[in-house]
Amino acid sequence: MTERIYSTDAYISEMTAAVLASDPGDGRVLLDRTVFYPGGGGQPIDRGSLWVGDDRLDVVRVTQDSDGVWHWLDGALPGVGTRVEGRIDWDRRYLLMRTHTAMHALCGVVWDWFRSPVTGGNMEPGHGRLDFELPDWDPENRTPLEEALNAAIARRLPIHVSFMPREDADQDPSLIRTKVNLIPPSVRTIRVIDIVGLDRQADGGTHVGSTAEVGRVKITKIQSKGRGFRRIRVALEETGT
View 1 (cartoon, one colour):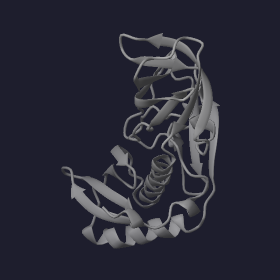
View 2 (view 1 turned 30 degrees about the horizontal axis):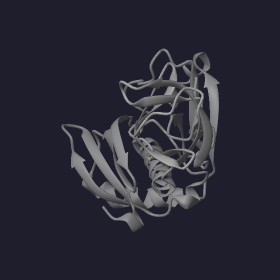
View 3 (view 1 turned 120 degrees about the vertical axis):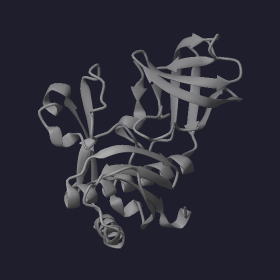
């Protein structure tokens, strides 16, 4: 199994690792530890490179399975047992961390106002969208919602990461803020992201350590997605739409 460094400390951007397995036919290697987030929950994969000595190999794809985290490489694959150095595109990762936390903050505010679950979501660095079931939505809610979101972020709330057994998590339905529980039954340990006092839910992605790092957020668009459903698009203010 791969040690998923990103899961416990999202601020680590480099690592040394060993190749556990190599799949030349598919152009990928399995590492014993990694800082590369393999995507999921609407957050895209990390970009970056591995080095074998002075040779740079760009990481073009990352996924995870029951064996661990696989890295697809642009170039000749290092053999099993080879020591490699890895480095992610930190600026992009940090922007994604801020974006992801902003979206959880939005989820917390919407939940506080409407008790409405998320029905879908996606993000890119600096902007993203969440879909909600909002049968009582009023267009006049847009400005107050944006103000409430930024007020919550401005509280400089700490963000804690913890882990709990699946059996315990299943007894706490508040951890699932999506319309349907999307966590596969095979996952036996649940990672929990807690924006203290605002939003606490099961989540595998990367986040900043405090809402103070997010900055101001703008609601750029609210779209109807059918009767009673709304898509809310947000952007970190300095990145635009």
